[in-house]
Image (tube, rainbow, N blue to C red):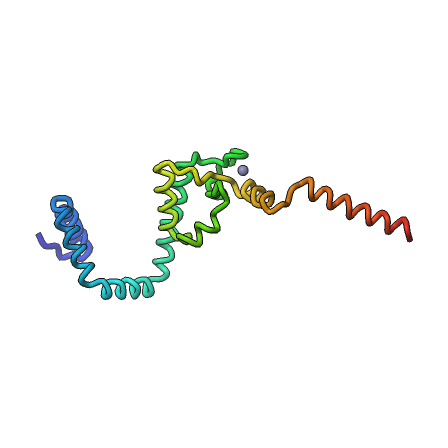
Length: 170
Ligand SMILES: [Zn+2]
């Protein structure tokens, strides 16, 4: 069956190859593997060029993928901040329980593949991550950096005292 309409033809071709793949999965995978091994350089060059020529689309795509994995991760982690219960997904952040986010980002970056890896980790039971809202995450960061309320209060009292002293002298 040959379609004159380009879109229809495309769709038909796609359906056919999908059917073929289902029936001969091993064969197809083997063929792809062999083809990749033989044409590695060419393929990498081509895909880089494609990424460059379609950079707008590419950016959009990777952003979309990232969002999708972020949402999936939130689902796994209970969809709310574990401290205050905030459940607005836009401000929920994936926090590293042991504060090793910096190290991890250096290792795997923060593209959608990094999110995919985190998602897969959580799926098999990793306890490295938790959900925090922006506020609670910032509070955790502040406290880790030594910004404790009582310290700030102490500092403020000292400033006030020195101020009072200055006023009394003059
Ligand atoms: Zn919170």
